[in-house]
Length: 430
Image (cartoon, rainbow, N blue to C red; front, side):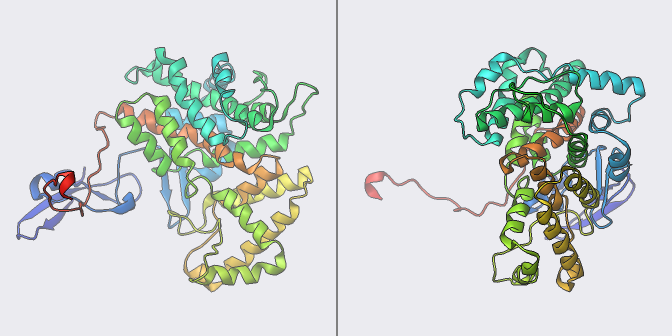
């Protein structure tokens, strides 16, 4: 807390000083906790776009400068030098691990990837065409029925067990959902494979023949998971915190986050980019569609450009663009024309005054869908892949929230605009 204060004058002329809190980086925040008690007014901020809902030391974003850092480390450095498992340790524990700590953590995750057989039977109750996100949310929520002996949030050991368990088992759940959709048998995880290799194995291996894992595919997924691992107080992360603030078991809180991510305005943007590129169809049509995007009366929008937070380049987009090129070149997939179209659209949009003026730069979703498509992952699984990366961020925020002595059950207030008061009328007199 600083000595600075924000002076507020109420309509009746009385004044009060609200303390100003300063973080390590970023805007100051005005502490309005006393506002209702002393002035009988609430703040009004639809969507919480100007509200700091908590104090956190996990992730920092500067949307104006295009900066994203996990625990103080620039995401560019982590993407170049680290792995998703190491980044997961960093997010969960606050510091980069030593070699011994990383080896132990990686081994713990590898050894806990199998699901209780009863959970696999649970999948057989879903329709064959159930959406993978529906299954992911339901099965994660059901984990509290299988692992209820270690859900005491006040116990640090139980928090660690939960954190390791959700990170280890989520890829197995995701792969099982995919296999159900395509009518193939479930594939068990292998302890000799790393996180992304194991995921590829469970997604694409079949009992009838050996499956060879492409190292570039595994590297691409690892990079995508790093870049999706956390993004501050977004909709799904805030949902996990809000659900967890009630004391709900952590599996329920993560399941709530998965449901929030499923919304097309949150986790479905990369699928929308692919749909848009397929609608454009050819490089020769880009100019026409750019003009449509600028027309306020036309519903068409350029998907994958602009961001709620970033008003500059999304730092993740440049990294993903380079990986997208590597994947398409190595795998020699037929999706190269789609990538060429995306590259040309990016160049045209970046030179257009309309997009420059509105700071509409490519975001992380612009190329990620093309990578998933090139790897053979269907669009129905795109948001599931997002969840696999983001789950460690959700877990880190849940751990931080549950360990904070200042945490209260989330309870936003409202501006009521309904009837001022009415008397009940018996039904025969209405």
